[in-house]
Each structure stands twice: as structure tokens, then as C-alpha cells.
Image (cartoon, rainbow, N blue to C red; front, side):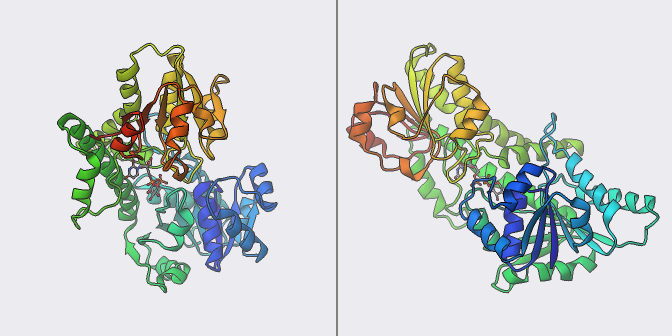
Length: 440
Ligand code: UDX
């Protein structure tokens, strides 16, 4: 099938590459010329395991192309995916400006029946707004007879395993009120449905909400576990044992129950807030979602609070090692990352920072803009002379460190482990003062 992917950000690139891998003809469009030129030359602007190989293979096979020529790409495609950014506006709502600009271009360019599919996480009700914008353009052109349909097809891709998530989905959601579009969407995903992956058909608003509700539910699980972790600290229980006890209940399940330094990234914080905003637009108070967000904001300051509890408020002349800058392993994404916010707070108290991350250092440098932060290529280098180590990301390389070497390199043997990577007993035996999250 002929597909146009508008917006070559993270989602657009991964989905475009995966659809071409499934055998479709995909042209990806973006107005950033440098990005498109780089991609045409096989350079990949994002960090995602497996993406380079996928791109090279499909570009080589002639199924995947990159261009800045939107009009041309739109006219020749039956399916148009909108995957441009929906950045949060001041009030927490998702900003639809770019999405509606694309809709306008579609209305100006289309010459044949077209299916317009939203892939970006768009606010509930966006589908109808897109429809209205396209219709207006068609009227303006004197071509109101040109037929098009709108589909919501949200993505459920985790950074770091996005390709696998796309090619082996738990479900594919197709939301549309236009029956005509359904067989085309079924054909599009046939390579996946024929392997047994389920495609769920629903109305467009439900599809839009299903995406937000899924992310909000997962965020709620994390905030819930983080609250339980605090209760563990207050009562003397151990969150890892509590988690085992809960996860064996099949109604609860073992996944997404890890207490930590709070959720970050480009989805959970933004989507929870956008949903709160949608509710308030409908004059509804969503106390649970508000609590999820509030607990998370507090949780992100937890390591700092523990650190101040240990060292006191004066941190001048203290040196802190940081392991992990990315909001989670497998990505260089530092958006809403607890590490970044904590480093800012520590620097405002004039503490010295020595930070390591296997892939996110460049992004952290750009975000923090602080020449006094020392970035280290090696995790042990970050420990030299440090009063304490703070762990923010559960990269595998931090899981089994050489404890003796750590102890020798550090000035003080204090560890604030925001991801519960180690056993508290073992760390104490090794001579560390060890703080986990909700551990005994
Ligand atoms: C998420 C959704 O999983 C995905 O379906 C959606 O499309 C985009 O948002 P992502 O942001 O890539 O994906 O990361 P995810 O692996 O879901 O983790 C989100 C955050 O939750 C991370 O900060 C992670 O550290 C945190 N988390 C996750 C926990 O604190 N505890 C857990 O048990 C699981």
C-alpha cells in the first residue's frame, strides 16, 4: 500500500520504518531539510536499538523514502499518517497546531480518496477537528466531492523496544466512524494480524481515549507503588517483598510494579496532564489522575530529600556521582528525567557533579548548559572522590559493579539507589551506607 508519513520524529520514523518492513511503500516527509538529507544518506537522528539496520534494509529495497516535498508525497498516497509533534501547551493541554497544519495541507493537495490517520497522541476529539479542517479546504478549492476518512491508530511504543513493540503488538487499535476505511486498515495490518496479533475496531473517540487511558493506568500503577514504597519506609516493610506478594495475583500481574524515582519520558507525564486538562475542559474533576501526577512530582525529588536528610542542606564542596541520566534504560531521552531535575537542584546548592550515562550525555549537556558538570565516559571515573553515588537509571552495566573498587574510589561510601538495583544487606556488608526506595 502507498503510505505517506508526515513528521519524522521518533514515532514517525519508527512507524514508517516498520510499515516498510511489512512490505508497504512508505514515503516519510519532514520540513527539516537537514534531518531529511541525513536520513537520505542513511544517518539516523534518534537512538533506538535496531532502527539503523531496519532503515538501511528498507531504503535499499526501495520501500522507504525521505523527502521534504509534502504536496508530492500527499498526492501519491492512499494512507496518510500524521505523526508530527503535539507539544504540551502552557495549560497542560496538547498543542494541535502542527497536526492541523498537516490537515490543511492534505485538504489543499488531495486528488483522490484518502485515509488520514492520526499516530501522534492527539487530544480527544482531534479526529473531528482534522475532518473539519480538510473539509474546509476542499470547499475552498471547489472540490467538496473528494472523499476522505479519518482514523485514529494510536501507538504503544516504548522507547528502547519500539521496533519490537510495533512488530509484536499486544493490540492494534483502529478507531473510525467511517466503514469505508476499515478494509484498507485491515489490509495495512494484515502482515501482523495474520500472525495472530489482534486488531480492535472501535469508534474514533474511544481509540483516542484508549491511548491516554492506557498510559494513565500505567502511570497510576507506578505512582501507587511509589506511594507503597513510602509506606514501606514508614512501617519497616520492604517494597521488593510487597511487590512479589502483589505481582503473583493474576488480576494484578507482575509488570510495571517497580518503585523508583518516578516516571519520566515524553509520554506519561505529558499524557496524564493532558487528560487532566481534557477532563477540566468537560468541567470534570479527575482526582485520581491529579494524585498520580502529584505523587510523581514528589517522587522525583525523593533522592534529593534523602540526600539532604543525610548530608544536611549545605552541599557546597560536596561531590556527587550520578549513574544514569536518561529517564529509563535503552534510550538517550532525558525529557522529564528525574536525574536532570535533581542535578539542577544540586547545582543550585553548589554541589559538584560527576555524571555517567552510556548514551544520554550529549542530551544532558545540551539541557543543563552547565560547564562545571563533569561528564564521565566510565561509571567508575564518576565515583572518584565522590561523597555519594546517586543512581537514576537501571542500565544493565550498573547491576553488578565491582563493590571493592567503588568503595576505594569514593570519598564517602554513601549510595542513594533510585532503582533498587542492589540488596541492602550486601551493600551494608560491603561497607556502604545504602539508601534504596522503600527498602528495609
Ligand atoms: C510509554 C508507554 O509504555 C508506551 O506504551 C507509550 O506509547 C509511550 O509511553 P516509554 O515512555 O518509552 O513508553 O517508557 P516505559 O517503559 O513505559 O516507562 C515509562 C516510565 O515509567 C519510565 O520513567 C520508567 O522508569 C518508569 N517505570 C516503569 C517505573 O518507574 N516503574 C516501572 O515498574 C515501570
